[in-house]
Amino acid sequence: MRCKRVREDLAVRILSESWHGPLDAASAEHLDGCAACAAERRQLRDTRALLSRVPLQAFDALEAAVPEPAAPRKAREP
Ligand SMILES: [Zn+2]
Image 1 (cartoon, rainbow, N blue to C red):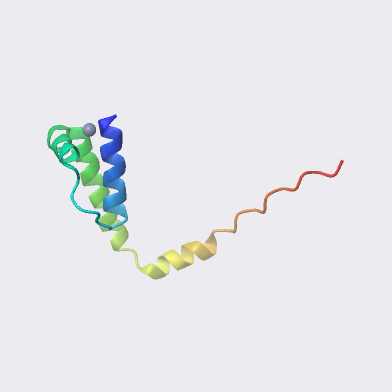
Image 2: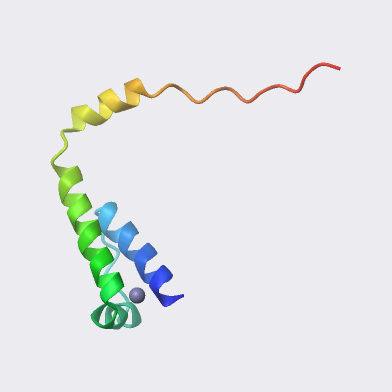
């Protein structure tokens, strides 16, 4: 349970590049002792570094290439 909570917190903090203060003490202590979560932190940091190298125009092109979600289907007439 602690792993799940720590990883969600890391993902939000690292990928959004927002900083809401340091991890709480229990999470920081967990990271020191949990190799799996420490590895997850490294991967998230790598992912953020890769994303930061993508020019913003690439995201515009991607958005333009993705079709709008289909309108919700109307119930069939009886
Ligand atoms: Zn963990």
